[in-house]
Amino acid sequence: MATYVISDIHGEYDMFLELLAKIRLKETDTLYILGDILDRGPHPIQVLLKLMEMPNAIPLVGNHELMALECLEFLCKEITEQSIAEMDSRMAGNLFSWQRNGSRTTIEEFRKLDREMQQEVLEYVKEFLLYEELTVSGKSFLLVHAGLGNYAPEKEIGDYSLRELVWNRADYETQYFEDVFVVTGHTPTRAITGNPKPGYIYRKNLHIAIDCGACFPGGRLAAICLDTGEEFYSTANNRK
Image (cartoon, rainbow, N blue to C red; front, side, top):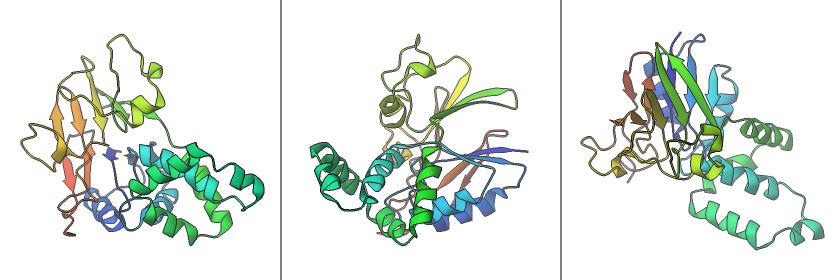
């Protein structure tokens, strides 16, 4: 029984399958996905459907799932005078923001599903965890998509807002806890200032950042085994 963590798959279905083969995931193992399964890459819904078949996969919500949920539910509505009236400036802004953040592939694959499966996908995403606290091999871990925005040492995890957990980037220069490793995605490790190995898992001040930019040129999908600390990587993305 081992515990693995992956983040920011962003529709890279082939990379995901490659990584599953590399870690040799067993039915007795547990796989956490730290959000941002959707958008940008070519097959986000295909990744979701795969995860729905995996009882040992536990997804957490990322900012891309939040954007997708509200927008897809709106787009699924029958076009009526009422639904048109509900297209207020806030929803228009949400749709525009999601479009700028790579919604096209998610919408294209979602539209190919029948209505029943569309609803199953939406209900599945609604059940994603916000964070997870674990003890593995005597070590404590906090799993969360982005980090602890507006961090303060006196705040409990339940005091953080949704935005602080899924949008605000982690501060890798600050050690949040004395003995808890904070495992995050959201920030591609190539974008972390001072990272000696851009594009690979980054560790500092009990942070473990695992978004290795799978959907970007030269990026890869990464996994970490919490039991051993071993790192696994897909082949780098060769798209330009």
